[in-house]
Length: 212
Length: 98
Image (cartoon, rainbow over all chains, first blue to last red; front, side):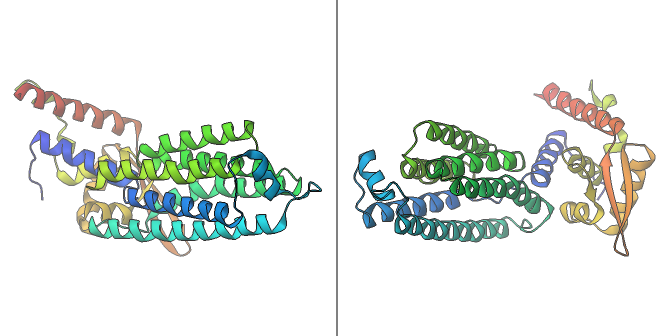
């Protein structure tokens, strides 16, 4: 065991150990692609079900009835749709990451995984509560950008424990959330970009970079 | 052979290198985690940890989780400096050979 190593070999080994012990590297890029696809399908389902037009006015006609009150069936559909997307995305992320960890002989449920999830959970739950508060105040238009914003912050918070690419995804989601707070009323469109297209782009890039 | 003298003898073993690498990028690491990461036996790991502790390169924290003793390790300032110097020396060696 006490064999002396070549300097180069030593440095390589040190780098690998540092990486493996401090970063959650089992996260699969494919999970991002799946999540993005589910999101796009889910949003397409909303557009199809309510025959949404491309104009903001037509969209608002669906979301709000003629008295200016929110249309309950519209929001109920979106809520169930979103929960379904979340469930499918999370399950595919868990499945794909477990598979990748097993392939590389890495532990899946260790301190590091717990730290990643915990760091994700805190901003996300704050965001969830904040969205409920927005709903209670009747600020429906701000819910979609707020979800993007808090999701971005949650990603940013975990990015130091996983691939650096996540940091860029986080910054993109945060910018999109802020932009969406200015251009109110395009919630679904921003969701499609943030949860759909961004996930697919970054997921595909990560898969290309680390898994092929 | 310019830089060989700069290499720290304390880090010559593979296990000690492993311990220092892991501790350098983490806050506190438990004995069991370290053992899993480095794939070594209890006794082997313990003796290297004691050696590094004597050199004051690492610090030890003993706690009880319920009734089980739980030992965690972290790198000290001196350990961080010594290990970084060791890495620099290694790098110089590689560059000198090229």
